[in-house]
Length: 101
Image 1 (cartoon, rainbow, N blue to C red):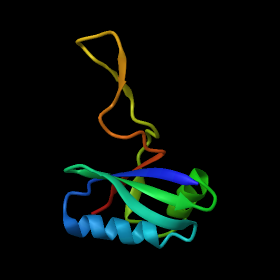
Image 2 (image 1 turned 90 degrees about the vertical axis):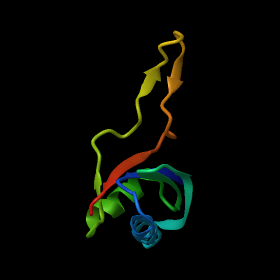
Image 3 (image 1 turned 60 degrees about the horizontal axis):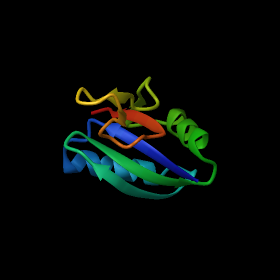
Image 4 (image 1 turned 135 degrees about the vertical axis):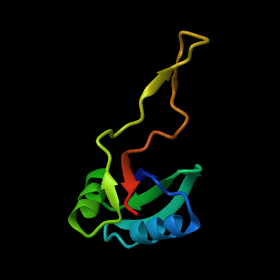
């Protein structure tokens, strides 16, 4: 099962490597690939044996370099130029975290 995990606070190559290594070592994760890289955050595509809940639980159980952000889905923004709702600029992540420095 594919899970999108967005991690904010990833501003350096060292922070990126730390996060990638951490996510790769989670027991429930079989593969980790970066999907989108922004100047201050990264969205990773994880393949997990048991899906989003298993990934969330695995992260919450150990000594983690990330902390959970209360919001679980990016908001939909309304374009001022039209009445059409458009998704936020970032992909719709299943889980959103902030890197602890």
